[in-house]
Length: 62
Image (cartoon, helix red, strand yellow):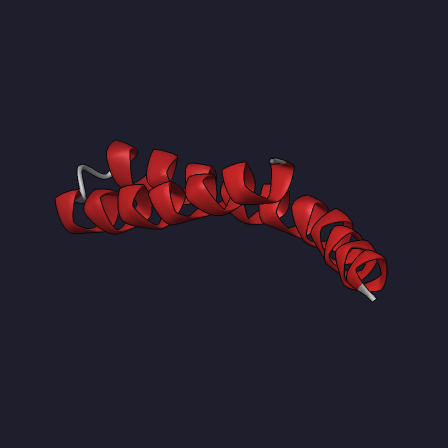
């Protein structure tokens, strides 16, 4: 039973990683736009979201 659960978790992680990378790319592009426009509020929001995405990526890759 333990192996089945681990297998399912591994499969979910393998499916989530490519989506997570796309989300990170999108947030980086949004951050770039905010920096270009000098939009400090949007920069702060993007950085916060990127931090959460980074933490999730670390958990999934472990």
